[in-house]
Length: 183
Image 1 (cartoon, rainbow, N blue to C red):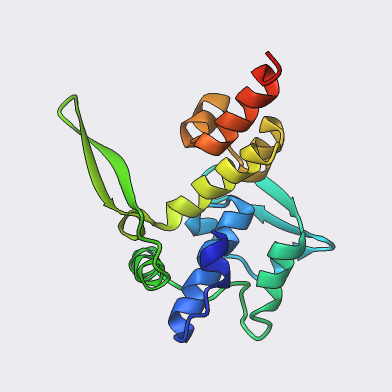
Image 2 (image 1 turned 60 degrees about the vertical axis):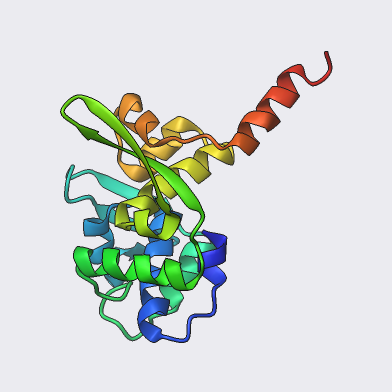
């Protein structure tokens, strides 16, 4: 995410789509909720919203990354640039390709009870939902409590949350070294 966040796009379109996507990575919210955020959602030092899917109220304390994104578009009637979900998905793939986020990545698909593994450049796999997944994985890897992640994302069941988690090899090594490194 950091590479994308600081990549110097020449096109305003890609700057805006990057900002929308990265805001999702920093807040863990669904596309539909991000798309409807307005200045009225800023309450004191927090972002306050009612999630459309669950009708659950979520309060996200403002921190530097979120505040920077909010301040970037002061003249809009909303907090973020407007994109349809389909256009956001198309443009974020293009932006990530321009930013050379193209490591070959394994992904799985399912057809009639069969798991099919395939490989594609990472930019082809990125979508608006990737932002929510990124938030959950990064928050967990940085030590955020599971209950706090659930509260911020609006996810109620731990089983649902765990489907999002992909623990990096680096984090596994760190944990194993901490647990067994002195043997």
